[in-house]
Amino acid sequence: MTMDAGEAITGGRTALGIELGSTRIKAVLVGPDHAPLAVGSYDWENQFVDRRWTYSLDAVWAGVQDSIAALADDVRRRHGVELPGVGALGVSAMMHGYLAFDADGELLTPFRTWRNTNTGRATERLSAEFGVNIPHRWSVAHLYQAILDGEEHVGRLDHLTTLAGYVHRQLTGEKVLGVGDASGMFPIDAGTGAYSAPMLTRFDELAAEAGVELTLADLLPRIASAGEPAGELTQAGAQLLDPSGRLRPGIPLCPPEGDAGTGMVATNSVAPRTGNVSAGTSIFAMVVLEGDLARMHHEIDLVTTPAGDPVAMVHCNNGASELDAWAGLFTEFARALGTEVDPSTVFEVLFTAALGGASDGGGMLAYNYLSGEPITGLEEGRPLFVRSPDSRFDLATFMRTHLFASLATLRIGMDVLQKTEGVRLDRMFAHGGLFRTRGVAQRFLAAAIDTPVSVGDVAAEGGAWGIAVLAAFATRRAPGQSLADYLDTTVFSGTALQTVQPEPADVAGFDAFMQRYVAGLPVERAAVTNV
Image (cartoon, rainbow, N blue to C red; front, side, top):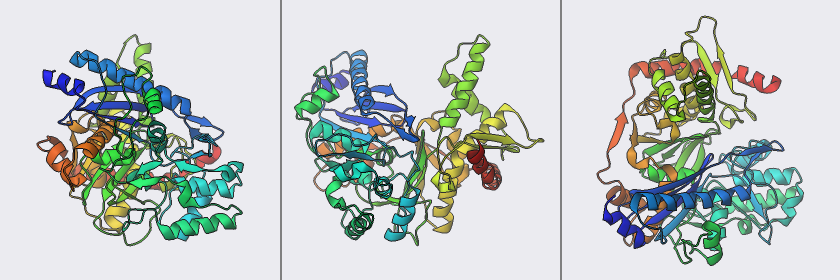
């Protein structure tokens, strides 16, 4: 690399983004031009404990510290300098879920992640009372379900937050949350940028009806928009983040955000009529709205961009995990034959093969439901593959079927937006592991939503890069400059994109697959009941 990169690092003209995703904790360091300078990561997995998906807080800090250490090693290897500190810092993580603490800061119940779907009674009642869709995974749904279930810890609650909010508080001492992440805890009033006051009042009344006296407004973090200061790294926070002492107290932090918001930043999708699809363990679309939707839909969540603009979110709990499982099986088979293969090569071969498969899945059907899927009304999942006796049973069609299945539930929600509500999109960006093999999942997504889909190398580091950009925005933006303008003129100016147009044969094939997919949902429900 050039000396300029080393000078930027030693001079602290950098921003560091940390994102705690579903399967990986990642740290990305960017320079003055927002280009990634170094990366560090740590793989982790959720656990299914007492029928709930969770991560331990010890694993959070082990992963964060390992990621920072790996990033420092990458700095040394690529640039020949030591990491002396950073100019700005941001934290992002999986949205939603339930982290409840008492007045001493002790966790009252294991972290309940976005993946849990045990909140059915709460979501049904709150959605009816509020007149907006309250998804299973939102923090307020978890809290109300705990109240309905008479959980003892509710009486000792002092504050609630998300995973990003928790990590940020440990680093700065500030109980604050970016507006995008906060919009996955409780509905936001688009006019004020604050939690909806009438809904807060109504929630307190519902809690009282259930025998619990609380003031929800006192339990939630304060809200900050992109660009606003959100505290500085404390001495204790610096030690937690990096026990080696490389990162010193005083580093300014931007508001902590959810992975949906950082994905929007990473794909320059924060302006109306833009959208993005993020695909990893889950898969979701974020579409920035021009106006209100005509009515409530259980398939659509209303959240915000990191700047507070309204967004329609189609969130599917199940994304690429089942594809990972099949790739692992093929890797194991290759090794049993005596061929040592890299998993990334296996993915590329399998994904590329799918391009030659039957356009409609050839009589095969798959469901990638490892966990429940609220959009299709399933509280639990069972991964399922089934085919008709006369199906075209070859590798190419098999892989196309599983790739289609990873997009099928998203398509159901996007149909509500595009066909029922008439929401228009000028551009859709895609990022995440599913799109790493060039031109495959991107092509199938274009067919699924009948919209051009773009990918760009600048978003290759995903949400960790996105939160690093938000950290840079908080310290470098011009007075009064909007996030959308900063991204357009400073971050993405001159960025090359690869855009795929939907092919008519693919669109028709995906439509035919979807008819079979929806008709076969009772088979998946039977599997949940009987297996």
